[in-house]
Image 1 (tube, one colour):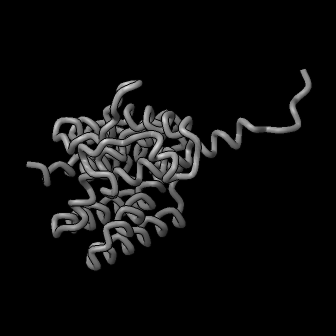
Image 2: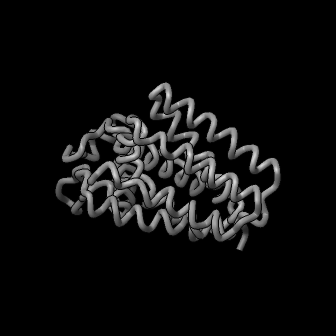
Image 3: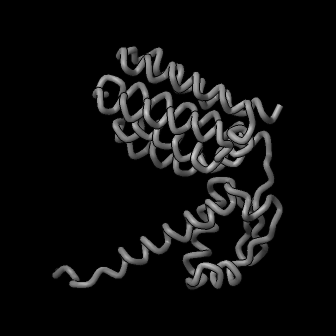
Length: 216
């Protein structure tokens, strides 16, 4: 069959993803507080879109544990539940362990430099108590290994569950407790540069698995 000259599906996909990311970020940064009710009509008006991509986004957010929703009934922002965050933590830590194991052997000096620069920005952001900048730098640092691994299944899992633990990381990175991550990053980078695959994978896992200490 002939290929259509237009591609409305692509535009719709981009719109859907943008709505999802904006709602996800609003939950992670606390714009929408735990327990707050989310109404698709109000969200659609706020974002300037129809209700359809909002409803689709809410379903995706529910899959990641950020909201509780029932079709035709209320949708509320999920509470900061210790068990749910620890479950997400365990999965995310395992995925970063896999990413390190799959990517360390392929690292170049440019990759290592990018990780060092990201950690420097991370440390500076913590000193300035700039949580947004700290999270961005943290994403960039770990994103080097995830990007090299190029494992689509791994990326999909991280996309689904990382936002859950980012909510608690905002508390961690706003406190002195977050500074321990700088040293963990330094050790991860050292092992990556030395090509020590298994040791780097273990540190990558521990870096994420240490997160819930702020909940105890």
